[in-house]
Amino acid sequence: MSKIDRISYDALYKKILSIRDEIFEEVYSKKDDTVYIEIKDSSNLEIELDYFTHIANYFSTEDNIFIRASLVELIDEIVQNYGMEIFSRIKVRWGIDALWFSAKGHFDSDEFEEYFLNVSYDLFKDSKVRAKIIQDCLPPLDCPSLKSVKNYNKPMRNKILEYIEKYKGAKWTNGEDINICRWLALKYTFNKKHISYQKLYNNLKAYNYQNN
Image (tube, rainbow, N blue to C red; front, side, top):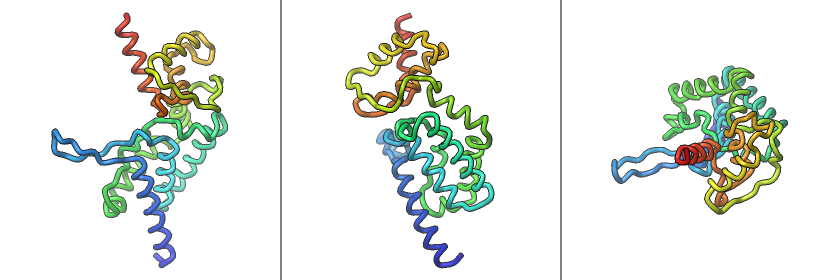
């Protein structure tokens, strides 16, 4: 490796390290007297896809050329259908928890690269898988506008029930309350924070259980 290559790889590693610290945090458990790794509440799909992309650039192999191309296709599809602005609102964990590393020796190891390839292939290997990813985290295409974001400072269950009532039976929901929660997770912040659609849907299921 030339001196120029080494400098560029060092700079790329520093960027990856910076993104890692945007995604992960160390949390101390006094009860167990241990430190464990958590994904930050502030992390989102925009940051996580950036992480995947930079790691793929670092490991410059034929496999990673494929991964980079697949990432571009996935990003382009979401942008075309929903707009660039929604990436920072999406709270989905696409295998990112397996891509934490402790130090450069760990990052440069064959084991870490294998983890990265396995996670990436599982997520991005073909168009059907990418379509399933999009379906899992985004509402149907004909949902109400997502261009603007609203904030709600009261208990989120109130807003969930409001929109379940409003859009119950609407064609775009395909008859599924979870699609309303997917839309709501992108349209609203709750106390100025985006909440994953899974948390919104679990909140709704808890309410339905308590009232049935």
